[in-house]
Length: 357
Figure 1 (cartoon, one colour):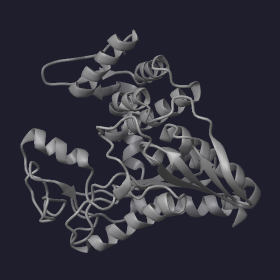
Figure 2 (figure 1 turned 180 degrees about the vertical axis):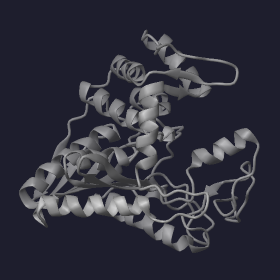
Figure 3 (figure 1 turned 90 degrees about the horizontal axis):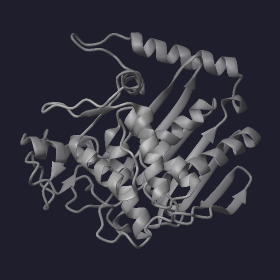
């Protein structure tokens, strides 16, 4: 397959070609083999499943962070604490994906011994889509949970300052013979990339999703200074859920709270951001027989999908959209937006790596 470009369409590349390009660029900038593997794997999760804000568009940012020293190219990950089913991973300022995959591997191992495994992560960095790590547990027949906090961009309910990050929560559950049930959600009303998209298109935002610098709701994307918490008029629920991510990620690991984390876009790319995260793995067989668990999950999702829908609407289970997008992209390739393609071209020249084709 070759890339396809026109004035009206983005370039389209096969998934494996993009995967190869990301790995080679990261290796060329001096990242360890384990960093190249984890960072590419996490970015390709976003790109494969349609979470493009956390897909390969992040490659240029990650290279900047690695070259600047914010992220350690060759970290020495170690466990600062271990007690029964609990561990604390010191990631040595590694790429966040390497830290999170390593922590989930440990959590899964602990769950086979204790029925549950919980790992707090300290001295980490941006880890991309939380769903990548919950899905990793689900693929092993375990229930997985992953969360992190991030630099402040979301106000509190009725608030007038950036307080929480988008603070995602992800939960993955295996379903026998099928794709897992997968929730991956931010606790903000919308992702900030949606504001940027609407700004570029010159169209108004939906109501109650963003605020100006005074905390007043605005539909003008050019005036949007912060995001609203999930929930609209009931945004206190979204703000509280963001607090759950904050407590598990930062308080429990001793890392920085959202309003203390250096902004992701810089300008400082030399100082580690001291971010935390948290993952959990649950072995269903510690609670109930495997066949009973599988029957319950299978029936739950089947009845959910078949439940009555409003006229003109359809019901989807968490993860259904992602599996549909993945099948399409595995068959047809992935559209790469002009800004990301331009970054690929610069990285190709800088490191002597062939572009995807």
